[in-house]
Length: 191
View (cartoon, rainbow, N blue to C red):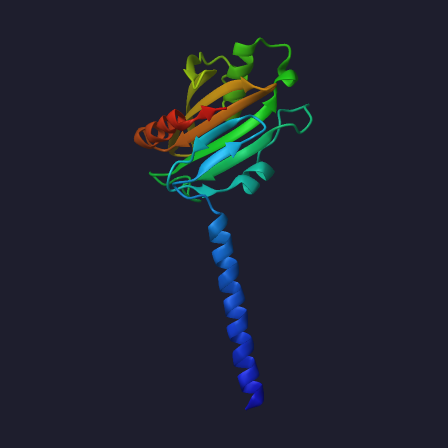
């Protein structure tokens, strides 16, 4: 009987520990009210709602351009879920890359090349539009991507900040989702 009680107590302790671990992990996931802040580049950005953090997995998957050292820095990668074929799927990625690594290009072309690279588009001649957000000049590029039978849209905002190309890349399977994501750029502020 004593062994049975010890086993029950041990099981309860294990379950409590596991429950605390899950709660701690959930507490670290971004919520709709979260704001991402980066002191080094001096900006803050309100995160879109309904997104899950996938920064670690994204960092392991994404590669630098061929022939360059690993210098891409993923600040944040989030998506609405694992099924990128879902009609309501969407994602956001914030990355930086040293401006000096594209020193042969002027600033406008460097922003455009960075945008095409992040959208995983071979079209580096996309004519980006220029917008100013919170006093910072951004190149905004729009891409159409085909993944199997799913057509995705991508919009990439790229600026130069403190010697780095800083990009916000949005992708979605519907124009409505993509528009909602890109409107979150209104929450971006520099300090």
